[in-house]
Length: 484
Ligand SMILES: [Zn+2]
Image (cartoon, rainbow, N blue to C red; front, side):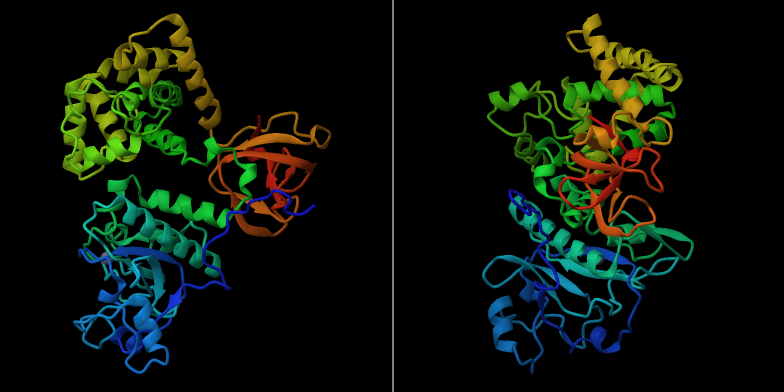
């Protein structure tokens, strides 16, 4: 029975459906550059308010399909596009608005042509190996346009990763620097491998995105796991691991981290843009809308509205005021996870040192959890029942992440137990063609979520054995899953 009620999330681009191609062979870069071994994909955005592709991309003067291309992309009436020898830069692709206003990607050089994109830094240049494209910026305030170009850029990146066998969560060593396979111009500068530009990090965080969400979204697209295998709640980006890793680096004690995370979960469900539910109703507004209005300076009541907001559900006016100032100073969205973690850390160190000391030295989760509840969060209800509940959440995180971060094998996962459900939390669990690490990788990962296993076999690389996915996508190592 094949595909009876299966909905496969397909990638937009494939061999059969390539992006629009408009090679700009009249440009200096196209004529003068050389081929490269592709290592990854690097994102740019233009830094100028003009979302139309025609501003930058035009077909060759003598291109056979020139008229059709002009119709599709639009005509640059000023002749200041980049298909000229006067422009000393060149990209492999562009993303922006076509003539009809729809958003698309247009390829302008072969993928293995070395772009003149990110410049260089003290340690070299990502131009040696990274396919690069520009996203045409608008005024950076339009959530709808942003969502479209972000999605298109993820689709293009997934297509390229698939084509060149790139692991979207991987990294490569270049000149002694560990470089993520997917990064942006600003990242390349930080690594000493690009010129000093801020793109795309002046834009993505405004809408709650980052290069981490890009990597996760690209990996999810490449996974293309049948959607009926994944419950809705698990499709939402899960920031758990990011928070755990951040707090472990800072606190260094797994009991402390787990106790703090259990409380944050109780407050916000670990969602950084979470507006207190009762205010969503009262103000008739969603988490995302509230966040956008605050970011756009269109909601002056943020500090004094008494609505809990963010990871720790900051509520009291002076704390919200400090949070807002912190976000503005950093140029980040008020709903930005990383910014909130930095703020949380700062608060704990400055105003809550007693709780901090307990977090660093606690010898069990309950001790740490109680310190956070009673000294830091201080909700109205601090009863024993609430204490136990929050410590219970924390204990869950401890069991999940303490140690080497991998889940212990659990029982009840034999062939006789089939079918059964397992939870996957790792972002990079590979789907293989057979039951063992000695069988081929399908090129896909299972995104975090809950899956049905229909057959179990012993095999190399997983003490708990290998499970065959009900979807037919292949086999996964059960040692890295937990039975639910
Ligand atoms: Zn750039």
